[in-house]
Amino acid sequence: MLSRTEHRGVCRLLSSVMSETESHSDREEDYRFLHSMLMEKKLHLLFKIHERLKRFEKRSPIPVQQHVASLPSELTEDLKYQGWRAEVKELAALFNKPHFKSLLSVHDAVAQRDFEPILPQIPDDVLDEDEDSVKIVSLVKTKEPLGATIKRDKSTGAIVVARIMRGGAADKSGLIHEGDELKEVNGVSLEHRKPKEILPLLARSQGEVKFKIVPASSNEEISPNKKKLFIRALFDYDPNEDPTVPCKDAAIAFKRGDVLQIVSMEDDTWWQACHLKDSNGRAGLIPSKQLHERRVALQRPKALFKPWRVKAPGDEGGRSFMEDVDYGAITGIHIAGFRRSFRLGKKSGWAKEAARSRRWSTGVHGSMCPPTYIEVIPYHKDSTDRHRLVILVGPSGVGVNELKRRLLISDPDRYSVTIPHTTREKRRQENEGMDYHFVSVHMFEEDILNHRFIEYGCYRGHYYGTSLDSVHQVMAEGKVCLLDVHPSKIKHVYTSEFKPYVVFVKPPRIEELCLTRRRAKFSSNEEDTNVVRIFAEEDFEDMIDLSETMENQYGHLFDKVVVNGDIAVAFRELKADLEKMQEAEVQWIPAEWICSSETKARRSCSYLTGWK
Image (cartoon, rainbow, N blue to C red; front, top):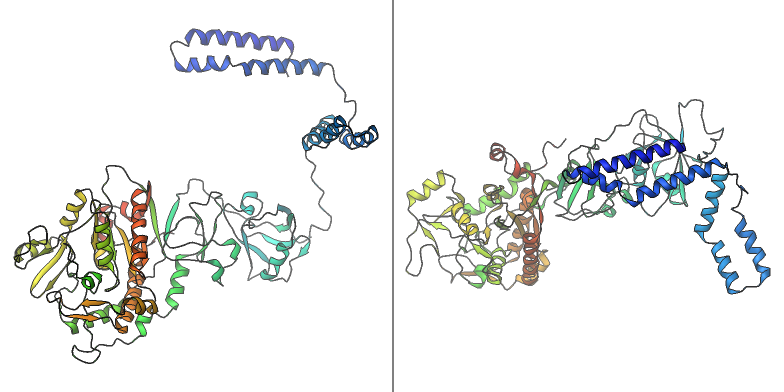
């Protein structure tokens, strides 16, 4: 505290500083700010309060009574005998107000100069002779999980803290750490108990939970400058359906497409993550990439063990393998860009295509990685940026062409398709640049060598292909380019230049396929649309098998999965998702797209390699 002389010196100093700042306030902004702050009325009031306190201190006041917290109850009893008039009732209600009682409690603390908190004494039986240090931790129990999991130490048999969930009650307290040994919970010894026997003890706790803990020898500090890692989930997960999760309450559920922030990857089996939309930032357990891959690897894919039945055309039940069995052929609607796909390469004929499909379905399982997570980064779209390329993929017959057709019809000013290239002669009713780009064989093959085609093939001695230039042309017009390619060709446009948004169109269960598509017909030959066939059950089985194989091998590239059970419902879902994506201020794109061009040339997709 300052004496009166010191106080006057401070006031003189304050007046001098104010005068000095006032003379410079017209020239420099800092002086103007300092002068305005010194002129604040609150600052002068603080000096007056300080002076009054100094005067009061000199009187050496002594409290009349050190214990006044009990007065309200005593006064209330006396008021009962005065008659319950309105004034008496109001006074009694005032005495029982929590704020009034708190004020009296503070008075007692000041009167008794009881300014330091009193810590309870540790009972004599708490410390064990063979323990270096023991601490008692008391946590208030809320509706939220404790935010920690436990396990039995294999070497000592002790119950230890396996992990601390970031943002949980245990983490916020800062009193419990990974590796701490739990000795007791609410006075109950945990010796010779299994982890599953401890959960009921925590569940029965009311109000607070008391732990007797032997701290771990060391605890690693979390670096505040650690780079944030975001991932997009490529599968659905519900901890209530997972019997192997360490603690269901400590885990979080997510859907395919959800963006999660990874908090900890120290455990090879269970990572810690939180939803971006989770405002409290509490982390939860999710299966690690390695764990999910092992789980999927243990499942036996149907395509591996189901025999591939092939019969020549003309045989009873014979089937030909066409690449574009789709709604476009079923309805007979003709739109530029809806041509036979160019995925057959130089092979043609039902036998070669059947053999190719069989090898593709069974051969990829040895090297495929199941879709788990993909690392993503936020992309803030600028008003001058072009629309992202939209790629629709799916097995033949699932309805890719019909969905593309409906998108074009629904908003022709927004959506458009590429014009394919071909080496065949132009027919009478066709127009250059509208139906096809008609080029020479030499020019087409030169573009192949220069990697100018996303996808191309040969049919009846003529080349057909979709070029990168045709995609650029649609995007330059300010429209959303709709592209239908085989999933293996996505790598040609999977770059920051195109920022493709990949939609996988998936068939429903075979029962629904049989119900909705039994009477549907498809063209078995593009050149002769009079030759049509009806879907058979084998077609539906092959469609589902091929869908599973595509999803297993290329699922890490898919941003959206649409199940086409009902074409109208699937179209509404797709259109709404595309509009939401295009209007979003922040979009999440693969982190690989910001890599150097050399890295991009070596990798075709970002698949969470080298995270740790």
